[in-house]
Length: 308
Image 1 (cartoon, rainbow, N blue to C red):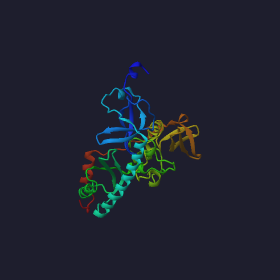
Image 2 (image 1 turned 45 degrees about the vertical axis):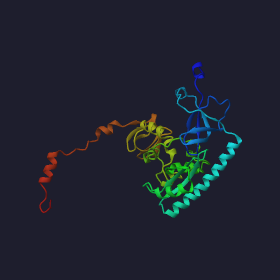
Image 3 (image 1 turned 45 degrees about the horizontal axis):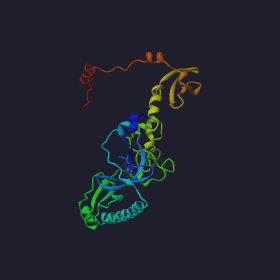
Image 4 (image 1 turned 60 degrees about the vertical axis):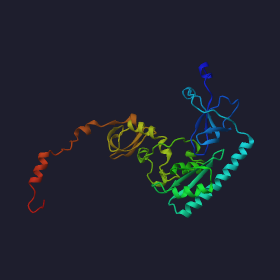
């Protein structure tokens, strides 16, 4: 580490909830800390207690002097209060869910709730089974009376975030879902990723516990795309050491292709062992595209008795 980097402030990442993202703070004035320590910080939502998840080493991030400072490390009493706030938030979930049922708000379910450390803010995180945002005004009115002098926020999350919060075993059998263990952001997943990798398109094989396409479909997708660029497409005529044949399947991970050869059957060959049969391509006559004049002539000379 250079002298210039030594003079930069100590920046750490702090997370306030299980499904929340990391926020950067200046920990220069804190003498000793470790990953997993809890810290008291001031945020736009009041005083919060959060968990230190990372010590930032990127000089570009550390050179930013706009980060708020860490107030102090959490004490044993702070951790006891944190547990009390968690229980209080669980009670708030029960109250809010009961009011949702009483008011008949369709499709809405409270996933979690969180009190700020100074108890001036209460945040409800909810999901909805319908696309339209539900009308929360009646609910807000009731909950505000139950928790007076508390600022209350409502945040809607999608099914992937719900799965991340709930945790548990993944659809593949892993003890902990990827979204709960290490994924920080959800990338766009498409059905084409499964097709490129030759994965079965049966819904149970490509959807996760959130009923959305599995995040892991993107893990090896780029490798498959690159590997497929070096392999011939299916139904291509190629020349092999056993004779001429048609490509019936490809194996991108091994760099090989399966070729059907008359009187031989299907055989596997490495990409280095085959060549594209250019003579077959040359002998193929391109399909003639009818000109506008030809189409007009066909319209003109129709068999008698056929209605236009």
